[in-house]
Length: 280
Image 1: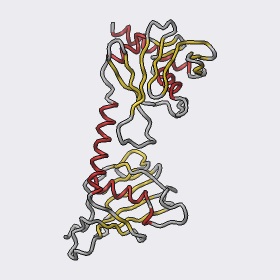
Image 2 (image 1 turned 90 degrees about the vertical axis):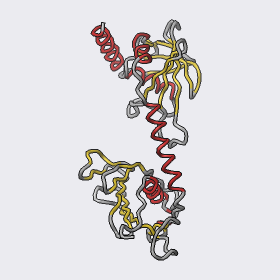
Image 3 (image 1 turned 90 degrees about the horizontal axis):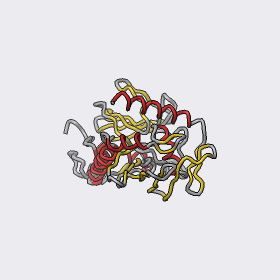
Image 4 (image 1 turned 60 degrees about the horizontal axis):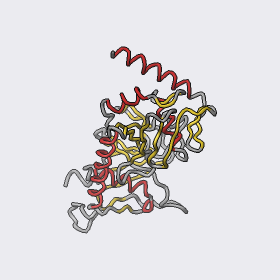
């Protein structure tokens, strides 16, 4: 039985892959593959209902985001069998080829085809029911959990009341220097371009120890086997996301107005890197 299911799934995926050479269009609720109607779709963002060609079977596809999530982060897709109430989730994995933020309905169909749940024969009931009834992909739990951690770090960063001056000096009301009026906790400097031709920031504590380095794009560092993209890597090899944002300097550059620099420092202190001096 398991072997039969594997074979059927493999065949469905191969059919779906073949369909990528063809073009999906949604016209007045009809899902068309090279002008041939292969199913039906109704609804609008964020909830769509997808029907088989004979309308004997349907699922809903709902776009979902975690609260407070970055607006540039793509939603995940919750696939639901309304008859049973069971659900499972998909990520948009096919962005480079067929994804369009202006046509989420069509993008969802391409995602289903990429996985063999929708083919040139329409919605594949056995395959999609097996997916819905199978083990959860855990996408929602992960995204909600990650965003919860981000929100917690952001709230902690708020308590530092951070500021950066034009010389890259970082200040906080939580500074613990010998002089109570000295609110310095560290330094940040920007290099553009860095060795890989992209923007780089370095954060140092008051002892001038390098605490973290942030890279804009496609950076490789010793001890980490992936590219760093809008991410910082700390002295103890922890990788954290910090978003690039150039809105703070529309005319001329000032470090005090650099939103990216502030994002980097906030992420660091929000994740427990309080800077200051190790000798105090």
